[in-house]
Length: 307
Image (cartoon, rainbow, N blue to C red; front, side, top):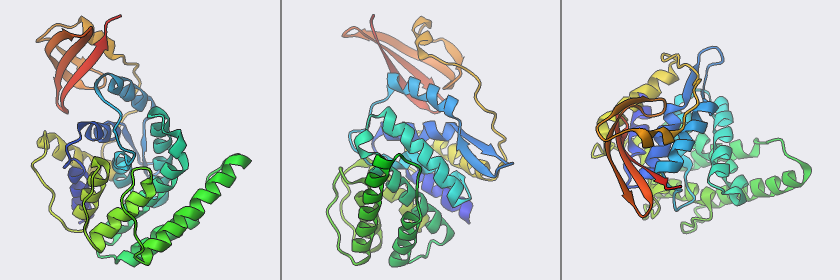
């Protein structure tokens, strides 16, 4: 039963029109390593480093702040909520740095703890009531601490108190409109929309989260998704990681996508990041070399500025 819910949550995350967030979810899935000894699934940081080097050539920074669903692969591949939380916290801090969103650091940290708790609690009991769920995630925030220097500790405690107060307001059904500056508030709004009164969600990040949560709670996922066969196979892969059946090897390469410049149209190559690829086309436009490639995970256009 849980396996089906996990697959549905993963698939539904892709039922949006933002290619860049979907690419990031795939990246984080590809970086997962199942550790049967410690009974956890974690991110291979060396693989993530190279994946994000590639992403700079084909991806873009999402134009909204709620990017939390890029954490979904880590959350649903782990069976233990605490080990999942540890991995999520490490990963979100890397993305805060990568996308230069340091001003929202504590907001992202607390929101990640919240989202991890939401997903684990509804997978455990998808009949959980709204107020019971909010009470559980509130307790998770109350008990959460991270090691910080003295100055940062004060700011963090203030942010945590504010988060608890926000949850209390939503328990009392005192809600606010969606605000891209308030990542934690967006999560609470999504829960309110799902359980109490549905409203329009504007940004793709919140839509992705909403669809994932709804699918766990019983909604059928939408299969009109680009490259659905690949997404379905990745959802199966997530379940196998969760069961420690993959025995994934740690990434031991160093990759740079600029080697693609030397390949010709029609060439095939076994790339360390994309795996088997084919060069579909190459063209110059405004001093930028566009290289279109096809891989199992989809079509990508890598852009290289002329030196």
